[in-house]
Every structure is written in C-alpha cells, then in structure tokens.
Length: 350
View 1 (cartoon, helix red, strand yellow):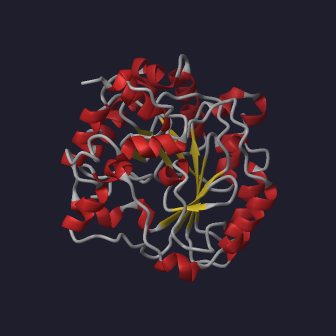
View 2 (tube, one colour):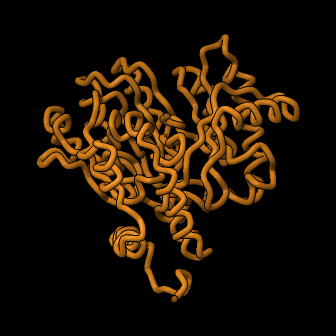
C-alpha cells in the first residue's frame, strides 16, 4: 500500500484538505463518518443553542509560526479585518444578548485597529472580552510593551498559549526563545495582578499536545502547570484549557508527512464521546472571519465551511432568527472536538 507520505496532495488548498478528510479511511468504510456517529447517538442534525459568544478573528498575521497552527498564521500573512468590518460587528454586538467577545488571530493585537475595537466593544456593554494572546507579542516590538496595562485598564480576560511548562517542549513547538519570552510576559501580567484570584483579572493558559495524541486530563495538567510555574518562576494563573489538535492546515500536513494521519484519525473516532456534544462550542458560538463571514466555529472558518443560514452568511446580513434555525455544519475534523473529554476554546466539554 502506498504510504501517506508518498501520496501527492496539495494540503495548502482548502478544497484538497476537505477531499483528503473525506476520502480514504472514511470513504472505504474503515471508519464511520462524524455524521454517522451523531446519528447513532441521536444527535443529528446538530442544532445551536442560545448564542452566547462572538469569536472574531482579527487577521492571520502573527509574530510566530507555530507547527500545529490550524490558522496557518505567520508574519507573512496579510489578511487583516478592516475598521469597517469591525464596525459591523459592533453594530450587531449592541443588539444581541451575546455576553462574551472572544478576539483571536493570528495575533489579534497586530491588527492596527485592535485597541480601537476593544475600546468600542467595551462601550457596547458586553460582559466579557477575551483576547487570545501568544504572549510573545508583548515583547515583539516596543509598541506592544504596554499591552498588559491596556488589558488591565479594560479588564480583558487574557487567554495565553503555553504548550508546556518546560522550555524544550515549548520551543520545539513554537520556536527558539518562545518559552523565555512567554515567561517574561506572564511575569509582567502577574505584576499587574493578572492570575491573582482577588483582583478579578483573569489569566488562563492553553495547552495543545506537541504530537499526534490526545491531551491528558485537564485538571491534572493544570495542577502540574501551576506547581511547576510557581516553583520555578513564581508565576500564577487561573485556569488551564486543554485543546485537541484538529487535522487542519499545518497539523494535517504534519500528520501526513509523519505518516500518523490514519492512526490519529482512528484514535479520535474510537474516542468519540456523545457526552461532549452538549458542550460543543459550535452550539453557542458564532465565529467571524477577517472578511466578516460567519462560521459555526473557527475550525470551520479555516476550511471555509460557512454557516448554513442562507442569506445570512455575512455580518452585514445578520439575521438571528435564520441563524437560530440553522443546522450546524460538520465534517470529519469535528471528531477532534468530541474525543475523550471533548475540546473547545474553553477547554474540555464533558
């Protein structure tokens, strides 16, 4: 049998990623599709619950190029949300019951209108604003050095990527020097009160596995992170979220190149847990890309699978009734969110 590594696939193409995910082990019946698994558990079609979270991608530009990044972000990416599109998002935010604005990227702070957008979002009265920061952006350029103060001023909840509490694993996944810079940035945030329960300034960390395997128990890993970071660097934080790597973009390329794709997908399918479905982020979240198009989650965004609400696929045509009646769009990558204890941008789901 011809190895996956030897097969010719242009996985930079979204269409080819989707074809790849739907062929082979799923097409030949070796594994049931995600739709079949939901049917078996009586959860098809998958429907949304009450909308609670706007997750907005402000652009794919980033100061890092991480090996597992499903966004394929990096310094060379030029896709950036404009202020006009941001204004459309703000207009909708003012007229919904959404309680959380979740800003992501790339590095969302690299959008030139990032601070304006946060300040305007605060004026809408939204209860919580999350910024998903890679930490190193704070030290990347003098113009970002005051970001911790900006975050504190607006009571931003900072969710920070830190692959591991040891330097070797972190740098292997994210690049040389990333761990040391991350520790310096976490120290700066701690000095302002972030990660201290009494301040109300929330600092969360995110853990992604460094290879083709599921994350370990979230609570156990949180305890390990807290113990090690406190002992070695006097760093404290609030929560750790474990997120399963989904077979998209760079991580899919890695799985194919390392000949781990079939084994990894089989492990996800075999670990399918119907108890995770109620907590899937696609059910209470709308993901908005840098152009203003709407998706059920940011993973669908990367595969260009828009919401199934005809005529309401863009923020400029917002229609909450149509969105509430839609079926959530799924594909084989969704097994990553339903394996084991589940996975979402807020950590485990079951």
